[in-house]
Image (tube, rainbow, N blue to C red):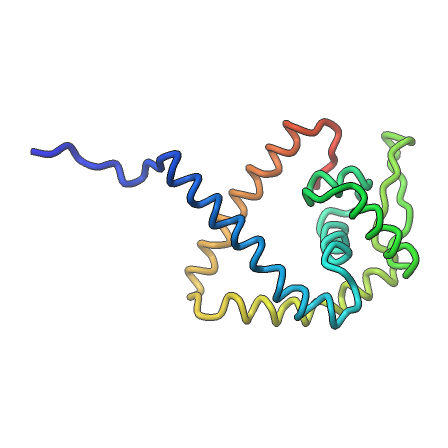
Length: 164
């Protein structure tokens, strides 16, 4: 009699293959976000991602954005400068660390972000069409677990990064 298989045990190869799929998903999602959200809003993908991070996490410093977005500091710096020129971000205070220079969305930035949401929601509908309500819930739950692991990894590898 054969030994029972352990279907729930993922091998390192399975995990690596899934990582490659996630990287591919991350790359492929850029085109619909650029064409469907960024271009109509007149912003770059980095600027949109900064706005999304600030909308979701609250005030963040530039180095925090670099770490959580995984993009070069120069790209974040340019995005922050453009958003500041548009009046969409403003300085925030960090009462625990006066040297830290966080920014947050301004009222105009919140309005611009809200204006981009219908286009982002349409991209979501287009890309997730065909998934059942249960598949959407399962994907959301799995995404939350992976995001939590990523957040833990960032905190463990990059001291001082503030995440919500």
